[in-house]
Length: 115
Image (cartoon, rainbow, N blue to C red; front, side, top):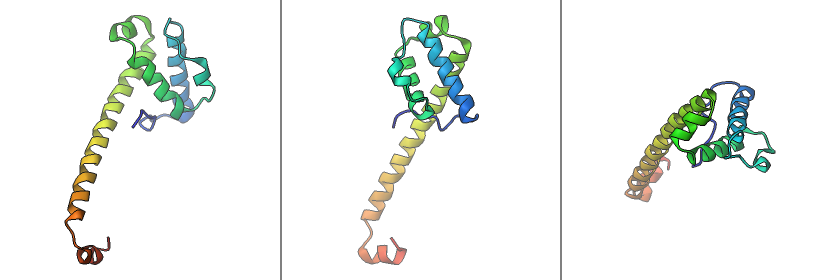
């Protein structure tokens, strides 16, 4: 599943402004974000765009060329993204185990359990 903004705790306007500031910061370098992608200023669309762009940059480039605000946003986003991926993996394992367990039940068992 792609990145999302669900982990962001501030108001949507505040978080959107942070993301836009990070994009503006990147656009000051030679690694510009395509301006056509920014037409719809929406967190759910902009966060994955920003994440994809930052993933292409080296840590050294980010540290040496981008603002502290962008560096902090990127650090926090990577932590949240790792947690999200871990949770999705755990949920996938749970769903697979559930599917295996349900496959072992008879029709009568399922009827009794209301499944």
